Amino acid sequence: MKILKYSFVVLVYLLAQQPLFSADNLPIDSESEDEDVAMVDAITETLHEAVMKGDLDRVRELVGQGADIEARAGDFDCPALHTAVSNGHMEIARYLVDECAAHIEATGGDYDYTPLHLAVYHNQLPIARLLLLRGANVYALDNEGRDLRVQLEEAIRDRIYHDADVDTMRAWLDEVLLLEGELDD
Image 1 (spheres, one colour):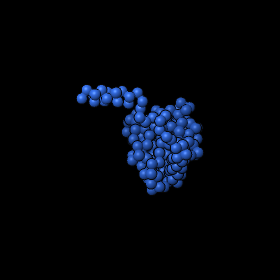
Image 2 (tube, helix red, strand yellow; image 1 turned 90 degrees about the vertical axis):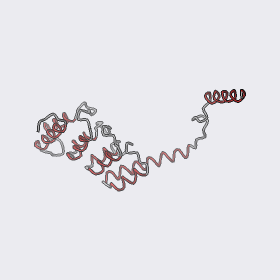
Image 3 (cartoon, one colour; image 1 turned 135 degrees about the horizontal axis):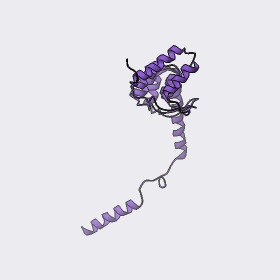
């Protein structure tokens, strides 16, 4: 019995010294790994294309196949939620946020916009409302140091957002402030 205990202690000691499985002692098929990466990249690009086209059924299918909704792709190198917001696809945005737990504070694109910044930029009030109700941060900054309220105030001042009139932009700002609880009804 003493020999068995000693053998067990030696075995535990040896296992602790040299892991059974590590990157150094496992054979890696680099060709297979490259193919896997290429497949994931292709699925991600396909996901962004389906999001851009507004094809919710295809988006569901690709997510079911393991597409990474947070992977950056497309012309603006941003996650799928950004693509849905930019293209005004409310149902896809809702699906990504509610069923896939998309990160609503992720930044992307040239200005490091959050999905909420993009909803404002693209004049998508229903999507902005959805994001705010799901907890999007009005005070998140883009890479120019602007939060959503500053962005809206600049839009009102400069009348720059997609030919929106000043009244529309003021309504946007009031909506944001109401949802944040900073204005009385």
